[in-house]
Length: 502
Image (cartoon, rainbow, N blue to C red; front, side, top):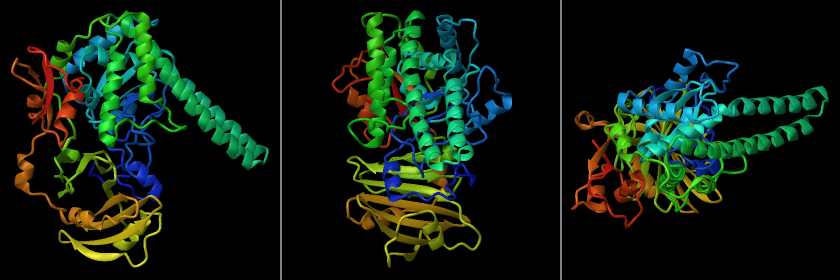
């Protein structure tokens, strides 16, 4: 959760509906579908407010060979994803893999540059001028060189096919047609219908581009000598980590306006494409080389944006901390802290909202919640020694407890949702009452998490290595996903495995 009170980090005028929040709260790591040809991303479903990871408006939305992105554009984009992450050995590997892939494309003369982003989210994207971007969160998920090569090959395919430019041209044409019909022909109803139809057309076009890039990426992967089945393995890992974050048995499929096909659909396509090339075992995966290159990289939240430790969240910059009730898993995103129970029946959100001089907390709460607040439910309280207002809101499928709390000059919002008509008042009060100032000693003792590669011994077991993971919950499941393993797998003595440690 970003602590700066900027328009991109604070939901200043957002008024989420009950339905919107019900959709938003399961998204523990929501990612915006970038118009920068962003392709490999956590597929948690639709992107809705209030907790949305967005590219700031000043970042370049599209570029093409006709418009070379300036250094200033690049700097703004990098800043919007947490800055550039410095890891020379990792960047060296990415650059060498990219060069090898480019040599296997139909345009080997093109030049590319890779930037590693200091973001825990799982994402990769490309600018049409050959700039490729990969987050450290994605690197932590990949298990070998062929998997990261599959991601890069997919992005390179977008560039060679000029997908971003084509998508922009289609969007501009659609906007022009609807505007002409509405303004020139004085037919706003038809203009609105055309605009709605164009959104579906653009979504279908973007989805087709993703599938096309997947197919070409697999073929490029094989021509470069890498294991073409690496693409399917990575997408499977992405599907599993998404399912863990949403608290469901499977990743959510996108809606009709989604710009990405479902991960399951993509796994089927890339696996079929790999089988057309040859049987499993074709090409190299270079697992040991990859693990050596990412050993020691940061994992999870940047401490400057807050830290999750188990059920506790601390933000040294904002000076606050809280603990969620038993049964909740929480994750810190750029704009909010989100939480859910394993079965998904309760969800929570904590974020920072902007309030104007002289604006009361009741007014703030109503201004940031567009649905009906139950009459007589508003209560003025003190939470952690700070003035607060709480309220109740009931929807068709969810019941919400809301709070606006003023800590110094900053206003925070805490929302808990319970499925059905059950009022989550008891766990909500337990959560809000845990809000406190950060203990300096606790802050000083905190150290960032990182990936550590360990070599398995004959005595090691899955459970033994998983117990060494510093993760909030489900240590075994997280260990399996990070290392591309299934339950019941046998560790190979002498092989490296990823752990999350301090």
